[in-house]
Length: 146
Image (tube, rainbow, N blue to C red):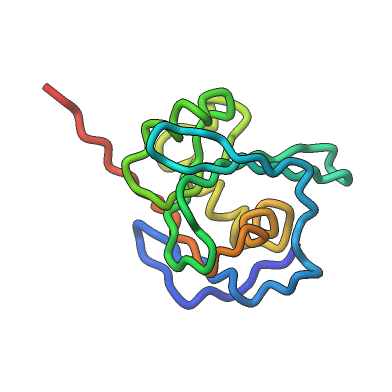
C-alpha cells in the first residue's frame, strides 16, 4: 500500500479526497444491500481482501453519491446497524471495526483515517459508492450528560 498526499490535515480532522480513484481501482463489493433505518435511507456494503483473508463492512447512511466532506467514523462491527439508526448527521459513513478494544476514542478514528489514506480495500470500498471526499474526526469530543 502506498500513502497518498492529502490537501487538508489538522490536529483534529483529516480530509481525504477520493475523487481521483479510477473505476478499475474500486474494490469489488460482495454485499450492497439497502437497509431500512427509520427515517434514514441506508446501504450496507462489504468487500473482501483475499490476500489478508479479511472482510470489511460499512454502513452508508443517507445519500453520499457525489458528496464532499462526508463524515466517516468507526463503530463496533456488531453495533453497526444500531449506531446507524442513531445517526444524527446524514449523510455519514460508518465503518465496522472488529473489536471494541480498537474503538478507544481517538485510536479507532485514527485507524480508520490511516486505512482511508492508504491505497487498499477500505479506501476503494468507500470510493465505490461515489463519494468525492470524506472527513475523519480524530478527536471526537463526546459530551457527558449530568
